[in-house]
Length: 210
Image (cartoon, rainbow, N blue to C red; front, side, top):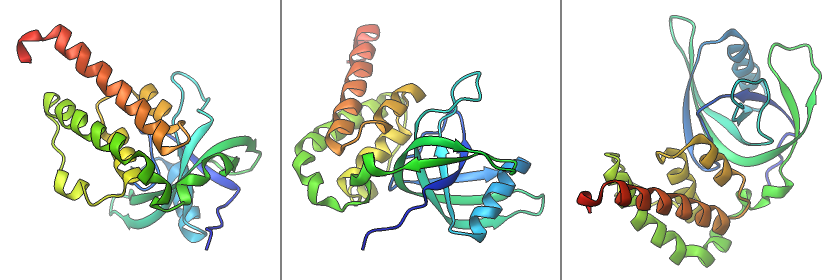
């Protein structure tokens, strides 16, 4: 059964965090406007959108990711700790005028319909994904990053690509480019090219580390 997703969603614009479908994102909410946003979401359908804010501007990128609040805990000092589960990417159509202290947007999920599909199409890119995993292990090791690869192997292909893109030590702009790549194979290709670039740059700058 196809999930019915809301066409108007509250947006949490955040610099430095790129959220992907089928990933988990813990958030520590303390600003009044976003406390209100989270409380309103939790009382309704629990959906909220995460999107990258542009530098030195109130503008946001046109592509973000819808999340569903799957855990919520209030602290004694008034903060709210939540866990968001990524559902689907969306494209902003327009901003909605409201009398709330947070922003809402009309969005479309049509471009990213694959996000709600199962693994049937992902098998086409399994070899490519396996290749990027090997490069990523080298890349993570060079950057001193640890990942539980045994647990990682239990994820489906799209989850693996999304997880690597979300946690990789690459720029926010590069992560946004991956987020905006529609299909799993295109996301994989972009991620692979980015990691190859960093590995090549590292080998040029540090030839003795090879």
